[in-house]
Image 1 (spheres, each protein chain N blue to C red):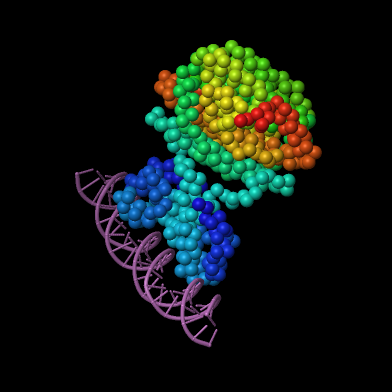
Image 2: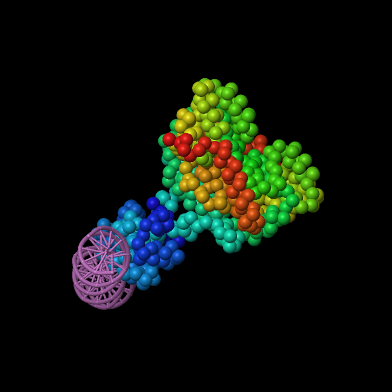
Length: 284
Length: 284
DNA sequence: TAAAGTTTTGTAATTTTATTACATTAGTGG
DNA sequence: CCACTAATGTAATAAAATTACAAAACTTTA
């Protein structure tokens, strides 16, 4: 989809001259979209047909079509290329890179989101007797967030960070209960075990995890939260954002499905919170 | 900036033929970007120069340039005039709206991020004897996430969800300690009290909150996480994403500042986590 | 290592596409 | 209804992109 990514991925598959074209474009994508094929050819020090061939190799119809795609890739501001944080980066540099990487990963996740399983999950959730959210490590924070969201709906909901408490909760689960397990990799042993335990008690197990993972295989329903594995040391876990937004979507679907009376309840909770707050007037 | 908007705004200022061009484009913008000037002229039933003149009137250099702008306008999917989730929305509808709203809010947050305070915060963090993260409600999940991130750096770090524990931690804080308080509104009484307590013990208090709020006023340093107040009932708290990313940025800045030996440590933690996981081979 | 084959690249011709200059038409106020 | 202005189209021109083909630059194999 994204041409800039396409270029970066295929970078080593290109011939020498085509590589020159790729470098020229990557070094300044913004100016590339305003150049003619002749200008770009001169810039990359190759012939015009080489540029054209390069465009075709990037799965576009030709140079103008390529520029169109490039323009679209650049539309959200600065390139979405995986620019990794480097030792020499200034505050502005790494801040920008992290924002970009997150935006890019969120955008990718949007394109991949599977509304069919979302819908199924909402179905299951609205009929749940009790909902549990479990995650470990970074995903624990996501589970916590989910708890906070669903708690407001006045439905029986729980979340534990302690692996032992999680186990006990799953052992005690029963028909009508829904257990939502959150894991980026889907390979955390303890979570897979939770899935098996809950399932054997006839609870519904929903996984927000990588499809095809051991955890996914044990779930009744999987909502994919796949994000290209980040090998970069500094790269923040963009997957979390993907998981969080799935929680948001589920919560939204949930309220929509439950209708007006549940929304009234939501208002009531919000009102309750207000009382623990300083009044706006206090602010100077 | 956005050509589609530009067209809609100037719609009534156009001459009859130019209007025909506008209509043709608006009725199917996606196909317009793949047409030549001749095709589009025939479609709108006008001459080619008319199309060209139309493009110039839209503040572009000519037809190809216009197409480029149009492509960029279309890149972010179809823009929703009304971004709010509605009762009648389908799964696809509300999922898309939530993604868009989040992307938009993240982008806005990127534009507003204050790298100067980020830099100061990193300075403070690298010199900290102990770091504490506190938040309540939705922000508790963010604090939890921060804990998880900084814990990997092998620095003394803590986070409590219990308001009483938070109090005790702040009462016992001392010179050299850093307390990071997370709150969207900056009006949670208990957090403001934490700030006052910690400050009186000479601890450094950093707030990730709204500037000008009661909490912000009590902090030594404020990193703004402002996001337009969401009045919409369904609208998920986009602010959280903004807070999370600030944590990401801080953590990244932290590792960069601490240099190579700390990065080695990070690798070690990652390795340790691996052992609690199913091996990739197990996956079928 | 030289010859045959294959791939890559460039030159020049061709075609497509966009722009300009100018003529024509339609519309407007006196 | 005439004169003037604005809008539109026609045809010529210029620019840009693509194609066909030939020349290099590599590989492979004897």
